[in-house]
Length: 384
Image 1 (cartoon, rainbow, N blue to C red):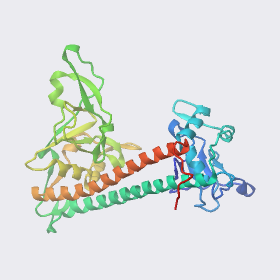
Image 2: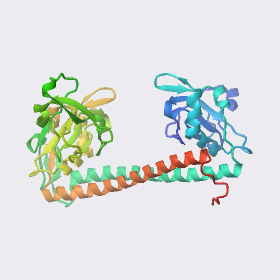
Image 3: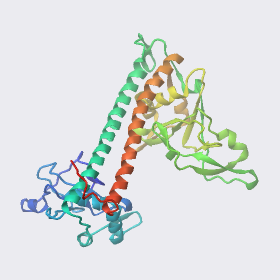
Image 4: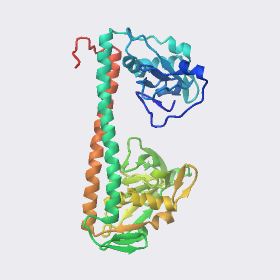
């Protein structure tokens, strides 16, 4: 099931299974089979796509249906898109067996799926239009992935060699350019801890304010689409308030995302931060917020956080003491500015590709709905 996603097949990791020789033909996938999952999250029930023979002699798990169509009546790509559409999802959900978080369908319910069948030529044109948009989405995904890898490599070079091709000197953290200093974060920034939830506050002291949670703090950006509020004492507002230029960092997360975060630009008034989010307030005379934000998300920053973190099986976290001890690389201010320009330039390319991808995804969803409900017809449209 992990290989069968909504609108594509993820074939990066293919496992093997021992079966009887006589069962091989029974379970063997054929080119043009539409693979559909029998269960999953409510909004992903019946996810899947067309098998095009990507791996020879491949069989499928019992939790994955292989729908083999009469191609003289039904185009496989068209049917797979119909299964993904709001029409298909609504049917699967209406007949599914549901638990709290998951839903599943059985063979009988799948066989009863009332397929909408326009003329075969129109089916092929619909599939062509939708697959063209999907390929454009995949192209943007590749750009994002490649540019993100380039950013990682660039940051590694910038924060070890700088931009001036200087001679290097040996420090306690290794070689750095001669004009750079190294000092603990506590000597060039204020590290502010956040407020804990669930405290009792007297009504006469109480004030309700927005607060920044771990969910809002992502790697290299802030997601402020959903802001929650918290009741705190009026006299605590200043103590926990975020200020323009603070670099907000999470205290814990996945190993590769530990210490994720970016710059708070005062987007929301009177906003405080949760105790699982640090606010680092750089001394602008020594280090810029932008430079520290990029340093913290660089391979150098990630390596430090992971080296001092308390680790469990899947997660890692750092405390205030370890964060304050972070050995900050301090180039002269003009070099800091040049490094920020280089990093923000590549960030702009990632942001541009991400925005294009989102627009294409919105277009795909709209087209999928319009074409599968016949609100838009393409039987008279020429597709080349």
